[in-house]
Image 1 (spheres, rainbow, N blue to C red):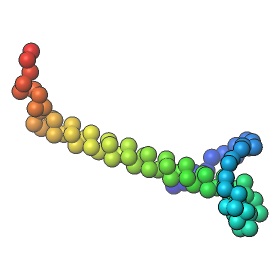
Image 2 (image 1 turned 30 degrees about the vertical axis):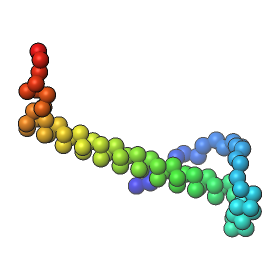
Image 3 (image 1 turned 60 degrees about the horizontal axis):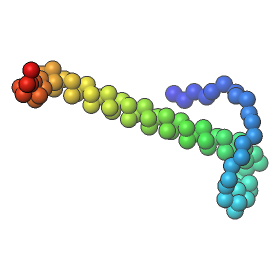
Image 4 (image 1 turned 120 degrees about the horizontal axis):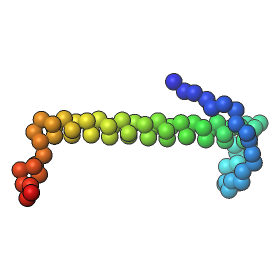
Length: 82
């Protein structure tokens, strides 16, 4: 489920890009800014998805470790100096 953000205010930004690549890209699009914005939005969505996946994997790992701890306790429990 992909959600698009509400239309946001646009402002000019400065980018340093390979001149030859920009020239080539302009031959494929009439609106380089819109193309770059679309590609950047896709990149951000991909990164957010990857971050959510890593977090879910970490949550599963923590849940598994907590289950082991609940079942057998901690190794350190047997060696407490208190």
